[in-house]
Length: 103
Image (tube, rainbow, N blue to C red; front, side, top):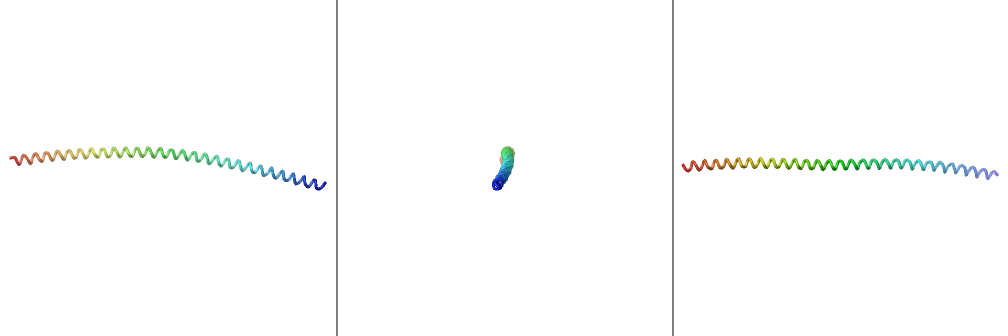
């Protein structure tokens, strides 16, 4: 009879230990799932930020290109106007020289 009680006690103790371990496993699983969910959310957030940064960088690049194109265009117009003024001055000077030489 003593053997039976000892075996029953061991069995009961083993069952308690199994339940305790199952609870620990369940808690670890919940913890891991929560951690995994947080990581997924962080990854999604970082992906969103990356997309925003790419879009912003693209827009800034386009803006800088347009500003540079306008600046180059304005400089070309100024140079053309200066060149035309100089050509006019050369023409006037040549006509003055011809007038002086013809007299």
